[in-house]
Amino acid sequence: MSVRLRLTLLYSAILVFTLIAFSVTIYLTVSRVMLDFQENALVEEATQILTQGVFTLTVIDTPRGRIAVPETYVQVRTLDGEVADKSPNLGDFTLPISEEGMRQLRTGEAKSWTETVSTEDGRLLVYSKPFRFPGQPAGILQVARSLAEQDRALGALKWTLMVGTGLATVAAFGIGWGLAGLSLRPINRITQTAQEIGARRDFSRRVQYSGPSDEIGLLATMFNTMLTELQAAYRQVEQSLQAQRRFVADASHELRTPLTTIRGNVALLQRDPPISEEDRVAVLHDVAEEIERMIRLVNGLLLLARTDAGLPLRREPVPVCPLIDDACRQALVLADGRALVWDDTVEAAVLADRDALKQVLLILLDNALKYTPEGGMITVAAAVRDGRVEISVRDTGPGIDPAALPHIFERFYRGDSSRSGQNTGLGLAIAKSLVEAQQGEIRVQSELGRGSVFTVTLPRAEALPADE
Ligand code: ADP
Image (cartoon, rainbow, N blue to C red; front, side, top):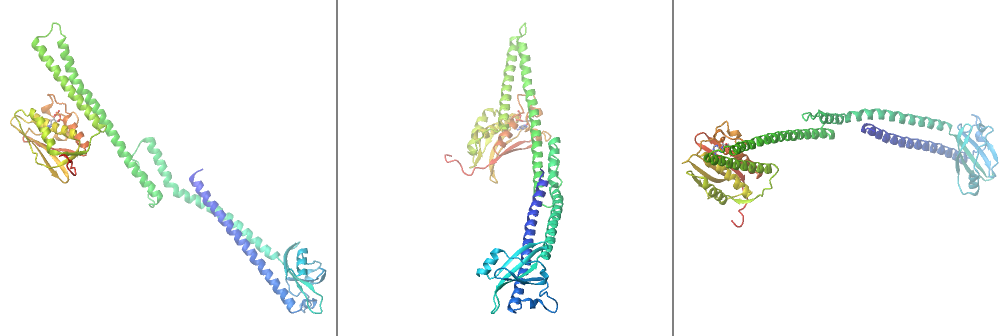
């Protein structure tokens, strides 16, 4: 059963029950009030008859005829129950009294007795009251009124209430059905959009809603927000899938080059007649170099794959100067005619993984030394800025072509100068991955002919470790 039908049925049922309860209350109240009115009138009339002592037929024998009170039937019974006299409007009819009523009036248990009796012409309300006057035999005065008129009015009221309830229910069902449909229309639209998105994978679709910002408005907004996020996530997944495909293709390509060289060299070694001793040494040297390059490449790829998968890095306070000192000393062996100077005065610590950060510095130092000609200078410095620590590696090398700058952190990107050598094009990509995994960032400034500055920025640790 649809929500629309369920809601409409529920509202209609509530309305029907309310109307029925209301109608029954009205009906019972009105009939009670009418009956009370008739009873009071009878009591009044009986009292008048008895207090004026005009309960005998003389009262009925007025100049206007023998009907004392036009709507009232009057009858007198002896205490034995015998009818002593009655008003002529009764004709042959005798006002009845139940045995119980007779007994109670006779014994004085009840002062008066009222009962309703059914006759062919409708119901009668009969009020009986005993009387005793000096010098007169005691008796029971009975006055009665027909309830036919009242019952007719009540019957009409009953029909009106029933028809009214029926019509109101039908109208309420119709209006409720329409209103429920109107209120649920935006939900239907959301469902339809969701279905279409599911079928076509079109996350650019949005639900069109221009109503008030009620619960349904909120649902539409939330649905659209969810779609926006889904669209972004989907795009991201697509982009990373593409990047991964490119990476795998590049990696295969990069690995194939040294393998091809090695295969060629091995073929040379297998030649018959064998190549000269001098060539053999050169070929073996080439093979060893290619193998070295492959090992570096595979290690780099492995590290990148691990950082992509979320390398478990520590986040602990690492004092900057000892780390710079350590990395620079290690890099000094490669300096070979270039000056390497570093600043060890900054008393600050960064929140980082010590080994990963040292590896980043080694990559930057390695590049700086690699690309700076003999006689050049490499400077490593640290500074605290806005709660973050900046470590910079500056060189006086050839600088980087502005066209190449946006690409140098890409995997396998190599500038013209390094294309031929042992370079893998992975160094800066690894450095960037490692820095970003530590919530840091890496940037470069470079001027052709003057040199480059690579700056790593990391969050500053609140306090230096206790032992430093
Ligand atoms: P690789 O050094 O193995 O080629 P990297 O990822 O470390 O790979 O560097 C990418 C490219 O960025 C290099 O090929 C080079 O062209 C350029 N580059 C990196 N560091 C420097 C630097 N200090 N001076 C000039 N060019 C640089």
